[in-house]
Image 1 (cartoon, one colour):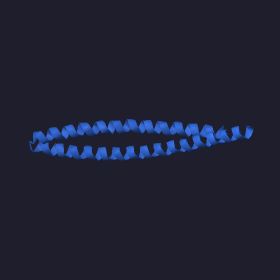
Image 2: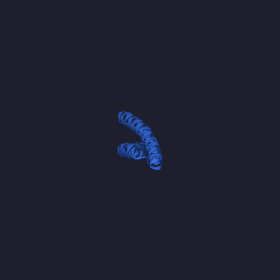
Image 3: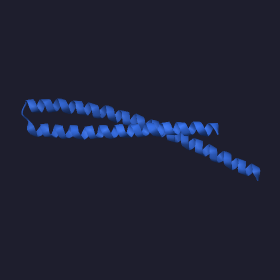
Length: 105
């Protein structure tokens, strides 16, 4: 009976350690994805600002409005990506912290 309990306990600890490792990998992938999204949003904003300057210079007000709308949308995306990145970094730190304590205990 004691061996069965010990085996179940070891199995449970192993399962939780594997799940924690998956969490860390998932957080790492999420962070990388958020970084790529941020770079793309910055490139899009830069391009739209260039287009906006060109449209204003040429008196194309309709396209200038569209460019401003696009810039607002991309800034919103950029802020959302920042929040996601902060959240993912926090999760990764928490997962590492929990992993460290599980290895000790």
